[in-house]
Image 1 (spheres, rainbow over the protein chains, first blue to last red):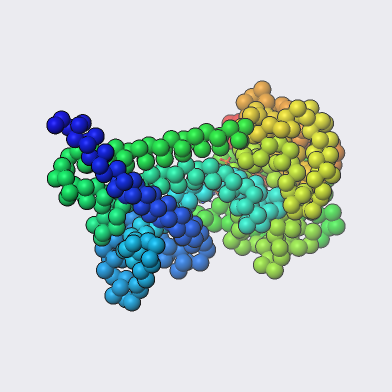
Image 2 (cartoon, rainbow over the protein chains, first blue to last red; image 1 turned 120 degrees about the horizontal axis):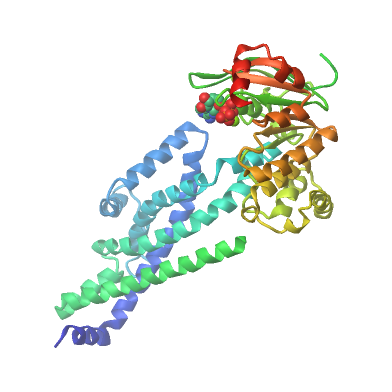
Amino acid sequence: MGFFEQIVAILQQYTPFFLDGIKNTLIIAALSVVLGAVFGTLMAIMRMCKIKPLRWLATAYIEFVRGTPLMVQLMFIFYGLPMVGITFPDVPWIPNFSRFMAGIVAMSINSCAYVAEVIRSGIQAVDDGQMEAARSIGFKYGQSMKLVILPQAIRNILPALGNEFVTVIKESSIVSVIGISDLMYSTNGVIAITYRSLPCLAIAAILYFILTFTGSRLIAVLEKRMKHGRQ
Amino acid sequence: MEDNNIIEVRGLCKSFGSLQVLNDISTDFKEKQVVSIIGPSGGGKSTFLRCLNLLETPSSGEIIFHDVDLCSKKIDINVHRQKIGMVFQHFNLFNNMNVMKNLTIAPIKINGKSKEEAEEKAMTFLKRMGLEDKVNSYPSQLSGGQKQRIAIVRSLMMEPEVMLFDEPTSALDPEMIGEVLDVIKQLALDGMTMIIVTHEMRFAREVSNRILFLDGGRIDEDRTAAEFFDDPHSPRLISFLKKVL
Ligand SMILES: Nc1ncnc2c1ncn2[C@@H]1O[C@H](COP(=O)(O)OP(=O)(O)OP(=O)(O)O)[C@@H](O)[C@H]1O
Ligand SMILES: [Mg+2]
């Protein structure tokens, strides 16, 4: 049997496995990016605020998380949280909920640091003159942010946030090592049954690519929309 | 203290780290007067202007605007800034807003004007400048000269008592300088109090009541416009004028 026939045969039999993996991968990526965006925003605000200890804390967090491997962070959360008494209960409607949560927590912690940098650089990319003009006319700092700076920063931030989502889809394959049934985990499962690793990995690669490519196309469309909205 | 002083500067010093940029400056600006500030690059002109509305925080000294020390921690600087218009070298129109929004956002959000009232006033200004067809344009669609004239109108919308200009024509193509200077000249005729940092010597001479020469963080010469050019005393001003005229 040739390579492509093998792929077709595997797909005929195991498509539900792969679809289930895709579903979990997307859930993990989406939740991680949403949580990462919420906490990343807070982190970015802390990093730019006037209170030095907060700023220092945020900087340390961001640098540390970005400077250590996701794999280590994941293991740390997975083994570390139960040790300090934090456990997630098992819920009947999501199998392996506690593992699932550990994965999402680790991915969010990681994403938060990257998102914070995305937001900070998006805001700092707005010309200083915009803030000065707003302040000189009599707007308070908060008003200037809300009316002038953030609407411009969002144009820089949203596409970068989209890229972060694409990155998270790829990186999330790592959570399979703690037994979360994401796309990578399903792929390994199918390999274990069929003993055909290359065709299965090819399928996984194509599926990941479809996810990320669709994601980045959507972002490109969004970006274009925003440019048009302005003119 | 004279009654018609609108801004009094007392012992103003400003340092950035160890670099002292303004060195004990004291001077007054009177109502309805136009004062130009001229000087070599790095002499502290922008810093001085930006201290007047506290865009830069002075290291020491007082900026007294209508008997209120703007450097005092007890005052709300935002209230006073509304009355001090500022025009920048790079225009700094709000890029996320069209011309109408640029002009009306501050009167609406800060002064609580109604949208209709603010837009009517903006239209009057735009018509006077012949820019009424640009009302829905975004800053990126305007020429430099148009941007700067809109920026001036944006300040005027707040009915300022004094206007600060920081090299309003330095970023413009030569053919657009005239249209902006004409607007400023008209403001002078209308009796607007203005402080103008400029490199346009002929314009400064024409429009100013007084000219200051700011060099090395000090006011080195403070004369009427004609005296400033025809009878300069400071050796540094004399050599500066030789270079630029
Ligand atoms: N935010 C800042 N931080 C550090 N140094 C600064 C800052 N702003 C200005 N300076 C320095 O202060 C000095 C005076 O600058 P300023 O911009 O006031 O000069 P200027 O007279 O406006 O010059 P130009 O004609 O080039 O605009 C310069 O040496 C400049 O490098
Ligand atoms: Mg300057």
